[in-house]
Length: 287
Picture 1: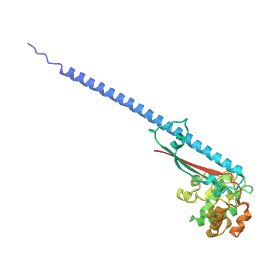
Picture 2: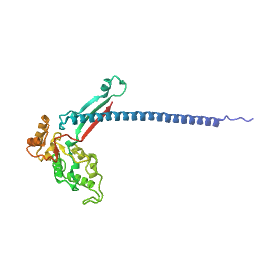
Picture 3: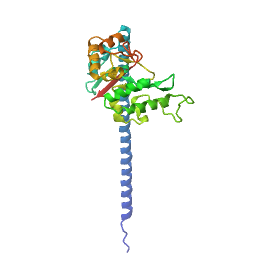
Picture 4: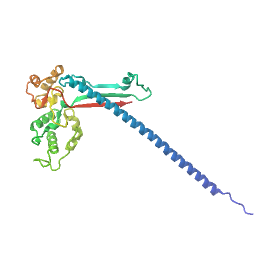
C-alpha cells in the first residue's frame, strides 16, 4: 500500500507567492503615498514662493510711491529724506489685522518684511570709465577709481583691469582699438568676475561702486566720504567734514559744496540735485 506525501512544495510556493504579492502591494502603496506627499510639499513650496513674490512686489510698488512723492517735492536727493529711512523688520500680520476685511490665521507661519532704498548715484559708476565718443578709457575717471581703491585698501591696478574690460566690451566691432574677442558687458557687480576680479574684492568695493546702464554723476548729498575724497582728490578728513555738514543742510549747488570742502568739485562728475537711479532691497522672513 502506497503512502502519499503531503504537497509540501505546493504549499511553500503558494506562501512565497502570497508574500511576494503582499510585498509588491506594500511597495506600490508606499510609492503612491510618497508621491502624494511630494506633490503636497511641492504645492506648499510653490504657494509660499508666489506669496513671497506678491509681498516683495508690493514692497517694490511701495518704494516707487515713496520715490515719486520725493520727486514731486523738488528737493535735492539727500539722506535726510523719508526714502532713506530703512524699513525695520515688521510682522505682516500686524498690518493685516488692521484691515477688517482680512482674517489673520493665528495657526499659520509668521512673515516678517524688512528693506531699504539706496541712492545708486551715491557710488562711483564704473560705466563712467568708458569715454563713448572717443571709444577709449576716460583717464580722469580711471584716476578717480584708482584713488578710491587705494583709500579702501584694494589693489589700484584692478582699476586698470576693470577699465580695460569695459573698453573691450563696449568698443564697437571694426572700430579702432576693438577687441578681437570682446567680453560681455557686465550688468551688475557680481559679473566683474568675468574680468578676473575675485568675489572677495567685489564684496569689498560694492559699497563704493556701481554698474549702471549709462554714465551718471555722483550725488554729493548721498556719497560716502571715500567716494567724495577720490573725486575731489582730498583726504578722508576733509571729505568727512563735507559729510557732516550735509547732514544738517543738504547742498543745493556745487558752489555750496566747494565752499565747505575747500576745493573745486567738477560739475561734470558730481551733482546736488535729484538722483535718477535707486536700488531697492527687500527681505522676507517666514518663521
